[in-house]
Image 1: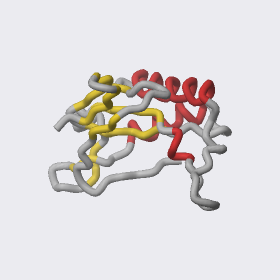
Image 2 (image 1 turned 45 degrees about the vertical axis):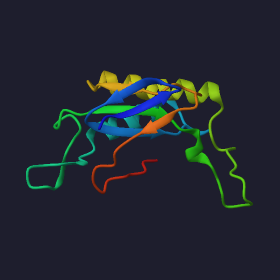
Image 3 (image 1 turned 90 degrees about the vertical axis):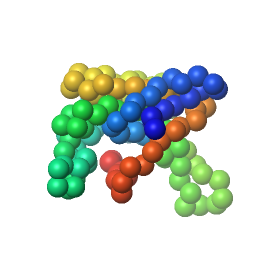
Image 4 (image 1 turned 180 degrees about the vertical axis):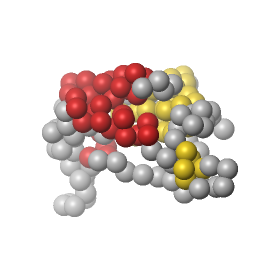
Length: 136
């Protein structure tokens, strides 16, 4: 089953094998942070080797990245019943660093499919195995 992002009836990004990345940009994030995050995720050994151990990178398994901007990752629910998104970057900075992250992944030789910035999307993914990570 492909992993994909849809806007309405249109598939705007899809991959068969690889990783879905929900990318949140915070107010204090920088271009350097976006580039470092791209290097980190490109090198993570989160895919099984022949022995079934998490020992292979996305490059080693021939995978691709499906990347979407997700400001709601910054939703702070500690107070009240309505999330606060005050720590999320404003849209201009969010778009700039989201695109810089994608460009950095591509410059490292990865195939990257994306969603659409600031669009309502339906995310189709298949969580294959026990790997869901948060990187900050």
